[in-house]
Image (tube, each protein chain N blue to C red):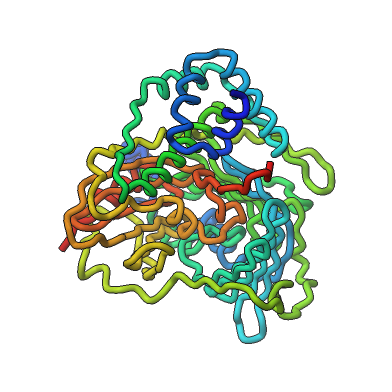
Length: 335
Length: 173
């Protein structure tokens, strides 16, 4: 009797581990024990997104791609009514200043005496690179914690986002321990080569930033040209079918843009997986059928492809593998 | 000749002038060295730490030498073709400066040295344009304009994509 009880106890104790050993994968481990209450790495991803939207901060960051290195100063505050104000000044190359109020952007180019007005859609703006919730990002990436490092004088937690498929790149993000602000962001291609990096070299997250209105130093100048290309979109979905959109990408916005020297406006659709953005441009022709001009290329971290669809040209580009822009382009059909 | 190589690098040659220069670069080792030298000067002026790969450059020139000129002599498409040639030239020019890996050491403002960062120099595949099919009513889309729109103003350089060759006034060099 005693002997039997011992055998039973041993069996009970071993059974769960036997099941785990048999399945051998983390997914099954979770099925057996139930999903973890929270994913600490994904919690960091949420902090990264939240801090870029809500914190006052100012600093200087470097942006590196295989082609170039540029340095900018960024200042960000949130006013009493909850509106985000951000100013980004280029510190090398042609002088530019970007003033952002929520999604509204004004880009001042003193050398050209031009103000370009646009809406934030597809551009990647550091440190606000994460644009979706951790829940959405978890559909497409696995997150894990890396080491703690010191960056720009601050302790910083590395978080690695590994893509679940070949339609996106790996990201390594380093988040300031105290506030969660993203201090360094790296993007790696499928051969584990670094293809883009943003990094603060100096940053103030103390909150002691003067909450005076953020304005461009050029705002008072007269005689500037105002360029505004974006308008509300025409109904692109009625004309085109977007099949074969890679998993995890959702359409976030669509606009109609007027291009200098183009008779018809270009439709600009933006798809995002929460970290990466893909733009689809549809340029309608003159009604006659257009035959294929196929260009596939990459400019730094940006891949692009262009193809003819019925009487229109479709161009797809984004900071994604070439296979992903190809998949987008291949799935577009004229209705 | 050196002036022409320099002009080619800057994207200042039109397609008719560029073709013989590229051909002679493909054939002449001395001129290729000159080309490398100019890129090295450019890279150091831009304070970039490129490690040039001679093997890669050779492969590119070999391929360029075999590449037929496929631009259609169509007046309507001429502007677009010109632009595409420039994209291709600029892409070719960047491939040459691109090495497999560049080690870019950044200095923080405080002066402490950050570990050198390996940043891959991803050579864009040469932009292949099949122009024989491009002679239709609609001109080819302008990828440069799209790059600017896609990147928005995310970084100042976004306003001047690598493929975009800025025309410069004479005597501006």
